[in-house]
Image 1 (cartoon, rainbow, N blue to C red):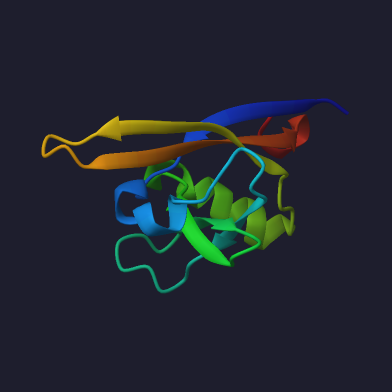
Image 2: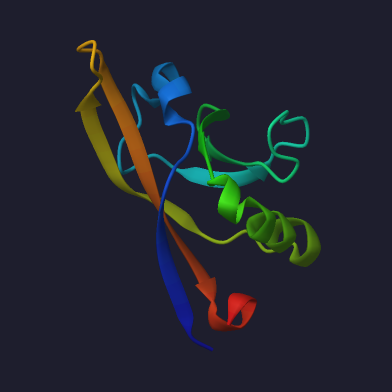
Length: 110
């Protein structure tokens, strides 16, 4: 049984700057469905396990696939922080973003 990895840039990080403040590549993260999300019924949070707080989301274009993976198969793929980016907004505010790496068995999505 083979495995594949994908790297995904987290969505919604501009709204999670306080939560991202202390995130490092060593931060333990997991995926969790957010059933009350107003914008996306399939919203999947990226959660900092140690602080039990959302640091971003799986992008909406992928959320239904991950929702099905988590709720229908019960499989929660291992994920890690792959990259932490920093950038300046037009107003000079320092911002932080993250990308995660997700590993899953070949047969999950083929």
